[in-house]
Length: 267
Image 1 (cartoon, rainbow, N blue to C red):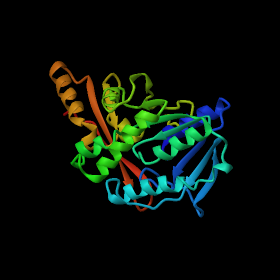
Image 2 (tube, helix red, strand yellow):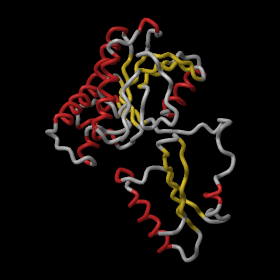
Image 3 (spheres, rainbow, N blue to C red):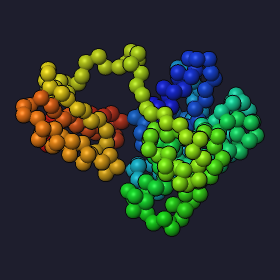
Image 4 (tube, helix red, strand yellow):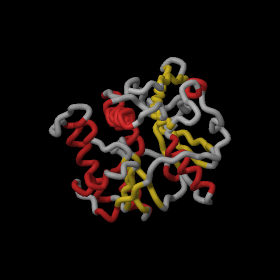
């Protein structure tokens, strides 16, 4: 699932809040999709109520089918049985999908709830910079309107990107609305690994300063910066006291499992 919102919701539930997460039933990030047989399915997970909205499946993260998945989710929110859910004090809409912001803004006005707009990926700027779409592309024009609308109507705008404030202000957001809320990790989780995988242990040596990167190896991750830093360290260091470890997670689409391939050679 999307663990950022799971952990945030679980911590809020432990503090006495009643939290509902409304999510589409399919995402390329799910390793074990929920089982849904109705348009809306409620499930209780660790004190958090999940409302799974049945949406179309898609195979590729960068595809028209994913956009249709997002649009279907927003459209089906119009028929969400809100009478089965608690009246909200606050509503959070999280990107990259921007389509739900219109429905959420209407809900916030209806119930007098605070509206929070969360930006994890800056769309449609990402589509333009990495996808090569023109600013006049119909999808970009629509998403640009939705992004600007979200900044305008939200009470608070939060982001995992600390430098996003400048972009948001340039799109009409009042600077006072911005809050930086990065990702974290729950070290008390009993499922947290106590020892590193063997592939990592094989390349990590005692007394050697090790920098690790675990994530996607893609254009958006700008790994050139990491490689340049490794080269600079190699020039400044007279001995082998540092090491760069890159772990790439490979998803098995058929079985829904994953593996890890690691390398630790200096660049």
